Length: 293
Image 1 (cartoon, rainbow, N blue to C red):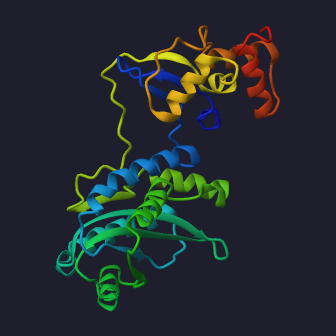
Image 2: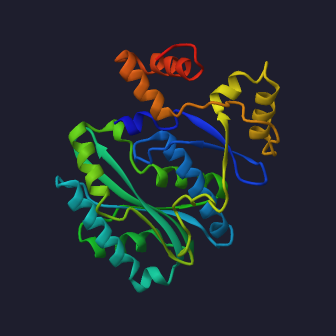
Image 3: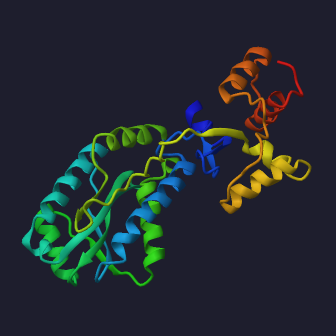
């Protein structure tokens, strides 16, 4: 829980080596429910999908659903994944799809308590006849025929929507604790997104940053931003951040205290049990030497 609560709490400024270009680095939890990490994943997915999508013909958003059943969520997901794999092997589908990027979306019907799990995909290829599509899906599943095909008119907007859902395939806040835990456990055991055909090779994971350099610490982002009006070095550093320019000045936080050290020092000295806001204000006070630990 502490990992989730501390996500993106403290941002630090570093150089990317000899170029003196400023990098903003923050601790990330990389947990599925985290909205901060979902936004970062969404941007990375959109950037990866766009180069493939822009070269494709007749892109459309296609949806597969399954009949609502009162079964454990893992069984439903595995059955959907198996049927989707079978469907993609049909000659009818392979003749119409040259490539696709697909992902699962997890919802629940709060009135009946049944899971509503479906697959969305950005599909390239020939025209898809909806009646034939439904018949093929029913032939595959034996009990489900609800599908949908939507033409794409605004590519960038559609990619942003798809990336947002792919980065955050569910909203755990809408589930009770038991169902949320069951879903998270199930999502660890199945593949919930992928690329086929011409889209194969498109990475849906954020790229790891280039680490072939020795970064240098420049200061705490919050400190530099807070003091940019009275401190010329802070002003120059923040300007370099927002304008993606090099920074040639000194470290603006010459004696940084690391977050974990601050956290431990504060708990040891004060046994703190206040609100998040009070904690972080006090943490900043310690970092700047205004309070003794």
